Length: 199
Image 1: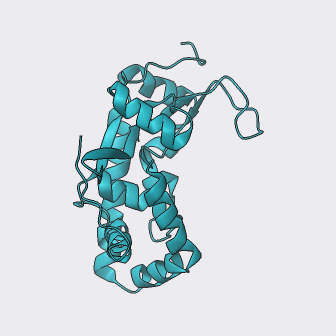
Image 2: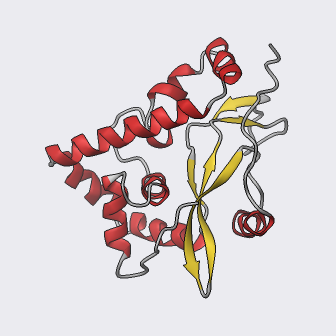
Image 3: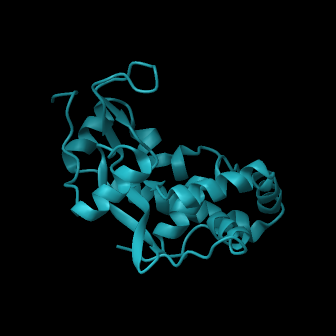
């Protein structure tokens, strides 16, 4: 088994969406699978969230540290929209992450809901892997970060690490998953009300 390669899934992104992703991120993720959610932009739409394969190839230095040829990538839903990222970052800078953490901690129902969302996310991530890639993951001892951890690689399901990953999951699920993402949407409603449209 070649440990420098994995099978992955074919990219299902059209040229217009690829150009949109490039414009917003400055690059195309090499583990891009498809667009998971759009938001309206004028009379068209803009990519809001992408679905990424749980393994990432990177043969070059990345963020100053040297990386292996393949590495686990537990964040499968990634918020791409510059506008939404900026608005969610503003919420975090205003202390809303801590408020949401407090709200979550004091609600048994919310804790049960987010635990279910973490489990659904982990299940989706593991099921995306091809059978050969599952064998590679097991050989490389990466099963835990890809099968057991939650949204965005979070290990402690009661901990709110980042609002962006929860909001991306919420948008990708068409608002059906992720209570934290729903709370983020409620906070953003005064600023913008994206109508998520799944691919």
